[in-house]
Structures are given as C-alpha cells and as structure tokens.
Image (cartoon, rainbow, N blue to C red; front, side, top):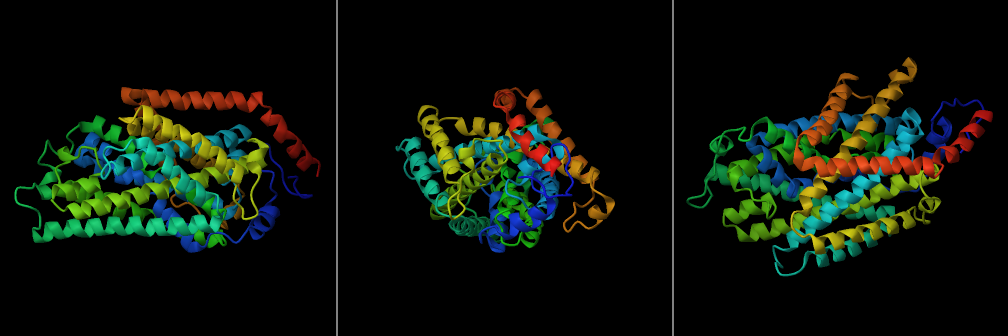
Amino acid sequence: MAETPGSPTTPGSMTYPRDEITETSVTSRRKGLKARHIHFIALGSAIGTGLFYGSAGAIQAAGPSVLLVYLLGGAVVYFMLRALGEMSVHHPVPGSFAVYTRKYLGGWAGYITGWMFAFEMLIVCLADLTAIAIYMGFWFPDTPQWIWVAVTLLIVGAVNLASVRWFGEMEFVFTIVKVGAVIAMILGGAAILAFGLSPEGSQVGVANLWAHEGFFPNGIQGMLAAFILVLFAFGGTEIIGVAGSEAEDPQRAVPKAVNTVPVRILLFYVLAILIILVLNPWTMVTGEVSPFVQIFETLGISWAAALLNLVVITAALSAINADLFGAGRVLTGLAKENLAPKIMGKVSKSGVPVMTTIIMLIVLIVGVVLNAVLPEGIFTVIAALATFATVYVWLMILLAQVASRRIMPAAEAASLKFPVPFFPYGQYFAIVAILAVFGIMVWLPQYWTALAVGVAFLAIMTVLYYATGRPQAIAPEEHAATRA
C-alpha cells in the first residue's frame, strides 16, 4: 500500500502510513474480539499443555529449584509482552509483530519472524495434539493415540473456520474451565496441607522442597535444562499482540491483558507448582500423566484425578484453538505484504483466513502420522523444537521495540500510551536471557536436534526469501511510497 503524500518513508518500513494505521486499519476492522475475549486469551495462552503436562519434565530436570526457573522465565515473558504491548497500542496493525520487525529491522526480519511464529504455532499444536492423545489414555489406554489426534483436528478446525467471534467465545469458555481448575487445585492442595487430609503414609509437607537431595538436586545444569521447558510453557503468550489487532478497542484491551501477566505467572505457575511439590516429592513426578492428575491419584482421590484429566484436555484444546488463530492471522498479514503466497491473504466475509487455516490443518495431519509411528517420547522432542522458535520470535519482538525507540522522536516517545517500564534495562535483561537459551541448547546434547532443526528452518526460509524474489516483490510498493 503506498503512503499518503508527505508521510515519511524509511528503508524497510511498513507500507501502512501512520494515519492509515490509526484510522483505516483499525476503525474499519470488523467488530470482533471484545475486551473480555482479549483478557481471557491472554490468561489462557499461558495456561496450557506446558503447565499441565510439560511441567513434569521441568520438575524432573530441576527438582524444587524449578520454582526459581519459573520466576526467571516469567520476568523474560513480561518484558517481551510489554515490548509487544507498546508497539501494538502505538500501531495496532494486522500481522502484529511480523509487521513491526519488518518496519524496524528490515524486510528479511519481518519475513523470518512471521514464518518462525507460524512454525512455532504449528509445532506447539503438534505438542498439544500429542498431549491430548496421552491424556485420553487415562480412560482409553488401548486406543491408538493417532485417533484422538484426528478427532481433535476436526473440532478445532471447525471452530477456527467459523468466525472471529466464535473463536473468542470458545477460548473464553475454555479459559474459564482451566483457570477454575488450577484455582481449585491450589485451594484443594492448601486444604490438604492445612487440615491434614492426606492418606496415611503419603509424603505430604513443606519438607518435600528440600528433603529429597536438596532444593537444587541436579545443580545448575538441571535448572538450565528446565529453563528450556519452562519457556516452552510460556510460548504462545505473544498471541496477545495478534489478538489485539482483532480487538474492538486495542488501546484499552491490550494493556489490560498484558498487565495481568505478573499475577498470572505467580498464581498459575509458581503457586501451582509449589502445591505440586509440597503434596508429592519431586522424585515421584513421572511424566506418564499430568502432574496435576498424579497428585490426586497419589492421594487416592480418583474422581478428582478424572475431573482434572478432563480439564487438561480442555486446556490443550484451548491452546490448539489459539495457536491456529494466531498463526493464521500472522501468515495472512505476511501474504498482504507479499511475504507469503497471495492465496494466504484471502479472508472470508467474517474475517476468517480460510485458506491459511485449511493449509495449516493439512500440515497438522503430520501430527496424526507422528503419533501413529512414534507414540513414545514425541512430546519432549516437539517441546524443544517449539522452544527454539518461541524464543527466536521473542528476541525479534524485543529487538524491534528497542530499534523503534532509537528512531523515535523524544516527543513521540514521551506520548506513548503504554510505554515499557524500566526501559531499556528490562529489555536488555530479556534479550540476554534469550541469548542464554540458545547457548544452553548448544551446551546440552539433548537439545542439539531441536537446535539443528531450528537453524535449518532459518536457513531454508532465508533461501526461499531470496529465491522467490520477496525483496523485489516488496520493493515496488516502497518505491511507490517514496514517489508519493
């Protein structure tokens, strides 16, 4: 889209002029997600398979010190989301962070970030599909995993092809269920501790935090290994920026959603994991079922275990639902900027990127095949792959926000409605922590496969960027903007 006469143009900038962003792109947007939808999408995006199932691997790796790892990971996520929130409120555009990285870091960065996010979402979907198949084994141990994967794809595919509002309502209901379950688990665990309700012979008590080989049973290496899985658990929170572009009032909805992050991390992660560790020695967390389910199984409360299993299935469905939504919107934004096949830019009258969603569902059929061929151990491999893509996207968001501030006039920076706190120190902390994640993946052999796949994806997409003439496809629009 060419810029209006007199609007500034910089190399690699967005093709949206400022007044078009604030008026055309926003006010003409369909009446889609309400503030409550954005709030619950933000709430639910961090409460999914990573917490209900992936937390088992993190606990096994770090022991009780995993609590510190969740706090550190939460701080990284907070500063990343504040960076995204600042840009989303200042320039709410379809495509969200893929557009921002292109504007401030160049065409290649925007292209790679958008495709890496889509890659992340699809990988996370595979993890969630796998987790659902494992959860269903609680009731149907003899049914092949791939059957449940296929059924799940049919359900979430129908929801995502309906409308934006249907997606929001479904996510709203899913989030109420899983948030209520986590709160109930925390209150139930607290009651067991306070009133001594645990069965005779069970090892319940605060002493579990240090009684089994100490608070740091696996040392610093265990904490570093857990850091990968913890960040996987927080993966997908950046969908707030994507959902914000579908909000009726992004300047109010996005800040409210982002500002709930610290409380969510403390309540739904740190406190929930603390309860798990106090009710059961960390050495008893096997990973065969969700740690949340295992707690009540161990305590002999079979009906609660079955109920929680239903909840964690709901959480995984919610995560897949949100991931398909986020990836679809970002890829559609890329297509409109000539950074993806044009067919992906087509949307229905209700605003649904139909072709993009269908293409992603076809890709996810791979999950059916993988669960049929490799039902054992697939979750850990997928989680590591998703973490590489997740932290890469976060890094680009942080770098884009820092770059945006460097070229922003002082008066404009002072007028920001949702500025990042502690700038730039919080951003530098998060950037260093993410770079450390890549270092951990180089250091620990169990992550070499995921690292190799991530680097290979980067290389392949970079080759495609130039081989398909994407820079030249963008250039005419930029030249037209300059002439205008």
